[in-house]
Image 1 (cartoon, rainbow, N blue to C red):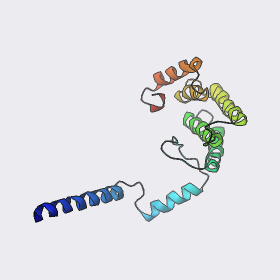
Image 2 (cartoon, rainbow, N blue to C red; image 1 turned 135 degrees about the vertical axis):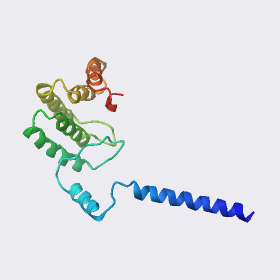
Image 3 (spheres, helix red, strand yellow; image 1 turned 180 degrees about the horizontal axis):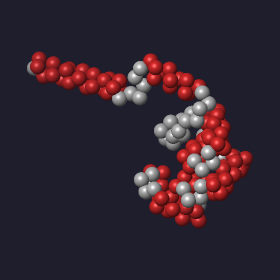
Image 4 (spheres, rainbow, N blue to C red; image 1 turned 60 degrees about the vertical axis):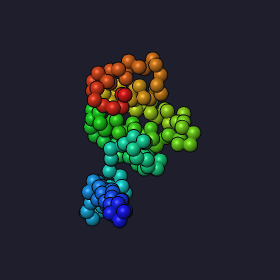
Length: 160
């Protein structure tokens, strides 16, 4: 009986230790230098990859700063499809109202302008075709754009 209790106790402790070490070992931040770099990056206006809201959420102000930073990127490299994708996404999240789930009329105008520019500069890209569909808020008339995006890169999960 003592062994069973001890084994159960050890098993519980081993599980706790395993979880703790997994968090430490697989954590994206491990050293003081990495923590400092992370904090500086958060505070800076350098453009950062915009992740889906389901992965990471920031304040509207942060998304506005990122939209400005990505706007600078697309201004300097107008055919950079990745920069356009991040610019549109940052702008969309900046004008998105989390409480109501709506985008204001002014926000929609800004997003439509970005899509129009993308159509002129990178019409054959995955990014344009996917964003054209996304901007239409799942309008079935825009479905061919989603299909085209999928055909360009079937491994991008945005189209699933």
